[in-house]
Image (cartoon, protein in one colour):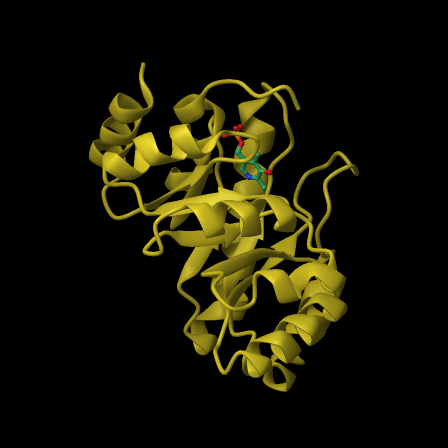
Length: 214
Ligand SMILES: *Cc1c(COP(=O)(O)O)cnc(C)c1O
């Protein structure tokens, strides 16, 4: 399926769920093909690559930083980034807030929760999450609007399902009184299960743009 066809297919299928087209490692030409098909939300996992692509591409693209954040590089994306998904420690909120203030803007962000049973995936433990949620008033310009998580990379869909369900429970418990509106979970291989569990934003790369070498 071409990039254009994939974008149309997902738009029909996803309804109100937002599609973030994950374009990491992919060339400008592939992103432009998705853009011409109407796609506006794109995700990248490296700040330098994101900043370089921002320079070259149409300015109405909404850029999502979905990878682990190196705090010393936040300044390169602070003027324009739409949402930062990978807030996995307090230090990221501190720097995000500081850089957002410098740019006189508010940057939307998501707390990344460790839900996968494999310990290679980053994110806050439940205890760390609860502690950080209690401090969000300190970071008004790094406005936390929800949670993000990645399930275990496995064919065991019962495990994936239980991990998404757990993230949704935390989202409901912590977010209802805070007016959270974004639950970022689901990738090419598990987005259907993520949506069944209440995902509002899916991050899909390889099944739109083709396999990567990573
Ligand atoms: C690469 C990546 C994705 C997309 O993964 P695919 O399997 O290619 O759809 C989603 N989320 C994050 C955080 C990623 O790094």
